[in-house]
Amino acid sequence: MKVSIITIAFNSVASIERTIQSVLNQSYKDIEYIIVDGASKDGTLEIIKKYEPLFEGRLFWSSERDKGIYDAMNKGIRKSSGELIGIVNSDDWLENNAVEKMVELANKTPNYEKCILCGSLKFHYQDGTEQLMESNEARFHQGMKKDSLNYGAYHPSMFVGRDVYNTIGLFDDHLRVIADTDFISRCYKGGIKFEFTKAVINNMSDGGASNKMNLKKRIPDMIYSCKKNEYNLLKAYWKTSLYILKLATKALLGENLMRIYRLRNIK
Picture 1 (cartoon, rainbow, N blue to C red):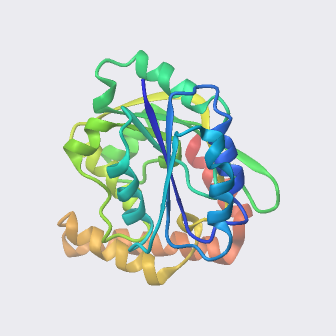
Picture 2 (picture 1 turned 45 degrees about the vertical axis):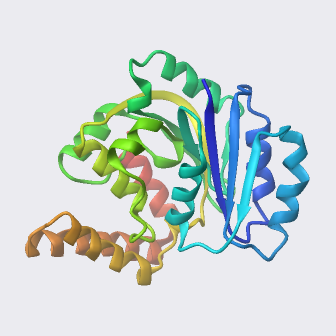
Picture 3 (picture 1 turned 120 degrees about the vertical axis):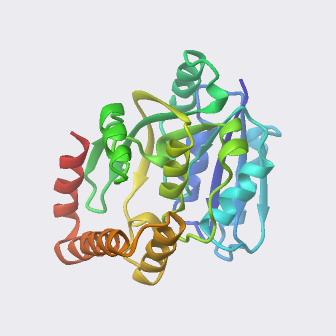
């Protein structure tokens, strides 16, 4: 089974080497590695070129301007040829047996190419502590049925069967921060099957785009999402208000509260 791993990067010199090493060191070797760089100017390309020979023809990269995170992800997906596709951002890193665990789950899953495989995630805070965010099938379905946040399934630890993208489509790059959540929601509503393993797949660093306040991107994303889902005015106002309240709480009270908040929502 061929697996495609995609990394998107932009001026990632401080972290991308760890990401690349985590792919290079995978216990499962039938991997095609695709790096989509957004025209970095800080030495990111030099690191990519340094590791290129070590992949022995399995590393493919490009460097050009893009429209943002999800446009870059879509480029990577279009270039990929694997039966399973995983995305690891340039400030995150895979467990050494991550791909092996996902292939094991795929082999147990009928029609895995039409499914999304979900693993657990370790979240690393800036103070050096970490928190296990364990995959939880029951909690995931509970949240999705309520059209709520998808706790129990975490996009950085998902591997997607190729046919899912053919059926549901790629990421909506009109969204600048929450297109991964939108993609999961579309898959769920579209009848895509989600399979779960407790195995830790990915390590996520605090401070990435998905963890920043950035109201200039987040509020327009929520407004667009509400229109896209055809929410009535009351529901749109309610969901946007709750979203802003969560962001404001994180900004005011810091990561200690968010650590407790995440822990509450992964049990």
